[in-house]
Length: 247
Image (cartoon, rainbow, N blue to C red):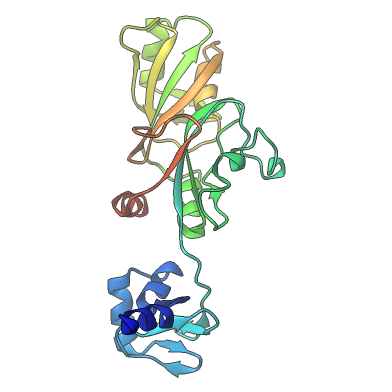
């Protein structure tokens, strides 16, 4: 019994070297084992090839000569309500999205892209800068599905024009699908597209003289709002993280 307590105390504030590399965003734990065996990882100036080596909090870890900072990568999915701001200068204010996640994890996570204050739905937060940059790039395309409420019923002729592709800002915007929401008024529209251009949904309808009253992002790169109530958040699963990294 005493040995178990001693072992637990000995491993407080330490983590396995392969875990340290994974949390630093270098690679997966399995890949980290290969790098450790290859002798490209140093701890406090010594090359470490020992599997299961544990890193202490103040140890200096280098990978291929570069010093690493280990911060656990967090991936958080929020179901954002309307009238909440994503702006960093609103941090700490009651209507900031950061107030909705402030006690969820200790790491500082930032939103991937931005949802307008009046837009609701899926908003991803992470401290994985590489993934955030990739997903936010205007030329990066992955499927998004929106539920849209318009000020007037959408004419079938205008639905067809959107389906065929409108020219916006000098570029043809191709969509995957558009339809009226089942059993709703024709002001309620479902739209699926891959474009990552800012405010593209509003621009599509504004070009045809409609005003978007409500915009809800319900599907984002394989992620859905299932089991995430409005104002609530959850961590992504490992499979979901890997899916986003493959986009």
